[in-house]
Amino acid sequence: MTTTSRKEILELLANGKITADEAAQLLSQPAAPVVEETAVPDVKILKQEVAQEVAMEANNGGKKPGWLHVRVRDLQSGRNKVTVNIPLGMVKFGMKIGGHFSPELNGLDWNELQGMMNEMESGILVDVQDEEGGEHVQVFVD
Image (cartoon, rainbow, N blue to C red):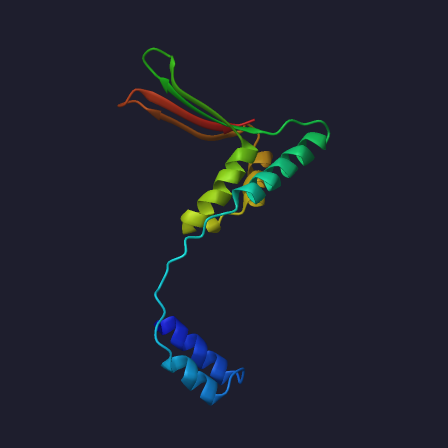
């Protein structure tokens, strides 16, 4: 029996939800094999949520959903080395999925991030020039 299980049983006893005899019986049971559960998100539900939000944005004044763009340009030639365009709805979907695997993402509030992006005048989130590496990186929304 795990320490957590013992604590839960003792808490139930302390709160009067089980009797001392019931607690003793539960504590004396042999330990069940521990099977770790991985929190796998229900992708169908997440897809439906994102589709609904995209449809709501599309119906809101005829606006198209915004995009997140990532550009890496070679400073010498001026040519793009990397170009990535992702719909913001997909970014939100990715954050929800990522939150199940990376606890750091759980603290991020999508509505707060989106509000900050809407308030920005230029839409540029990151603009970095690496003179030594000869690259110009831009991350922006529109």
